[in-house]
Length: 206
Image (cartoon, rainbow, N blue to C red):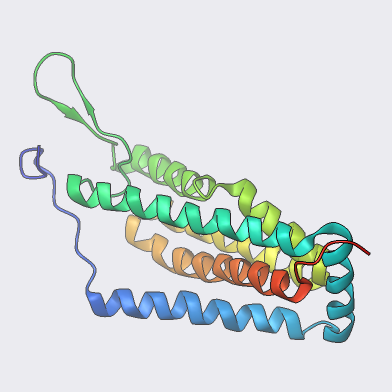
């Protein structure tokens, strides 16, 4: 069943140019933030600490394992996004139900206070789809490796997610600033995990 059959407006397509800008901002910006986190602390001390943690605690392998999970989650999310595109289901709808009798399709109520509640819930669910525990593991390892910068990054990620959910609850379009900011900061955490893993090395033992 198409959007026309459901009497719903089709989702607006994002232009290739806008997608390129989004990718550049969220990825190059992430690398920049990650490097700022690294250089804002005592890099010599960080290198010594990471080398020790790499040998004693297999920090390099821990970080690389976590980064691999992140990559797989990104690919999994892409599969879901492709399925959404094929179904013509627009946000914030996540599940589409059909009545047992008849041919009626049930989607989220996106109007009034009900719509505000549903969009807020969608904003919250979006973070847990990551899943959230992976991001928690990332910021913990980053703080373990470089201290206060990891704490600051974790705080900013949390604040950006609140901004995303608040914007989403008001209107689907108002989620975009928080979405871009949270994507950039979370990508910075992904970059840092890989960067710190390489710095720690992959040699075990004393």
